[in-house]
Image 1 (cartoon, rainbow, N blue to C red):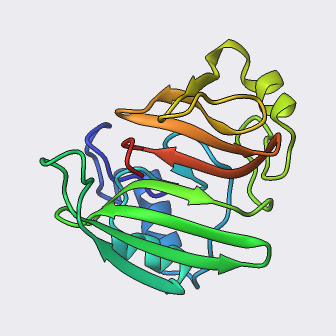
Image 2: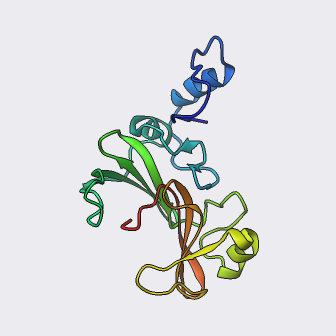
Image 3: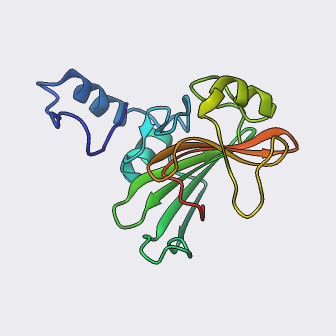
Length: 183
């Protein structure tokens, strides 16, 4: 697992810390493309705070690279770098803070990647409601979110959340990480 964040022991000497050795070894292997389970803070082994070059080392070169200004409704926001990988049944996007080049969030439209509770793209809203229970909250951005259409989240949108986009009563996108309202 690649974890670059402000938390933890800070012991990254591979001779003293076996998990640091595993990180160093996996980063030198052949890129595999996006893979793994989705959580509020990670997409498989890629965690919120991972450096952009480490994600490319793990997943390979993205199919698209774009740079955008920060959130138009937040004058203090940083510009972002968005990398997108095309996968067989959709895509995977990552958003990095352009100043720090560290991962802020991910999103996917591919059914291939389940959440840690087994929810996937294409599942009915009832599936996410049943697995997430009372932690699932409607996010109303101008229009009220319903079980048919809208945005539903778990976690803290200002730090780390998992966001489910619903259209026609089914999940169309799953996002995770720091998700400001203008994303």
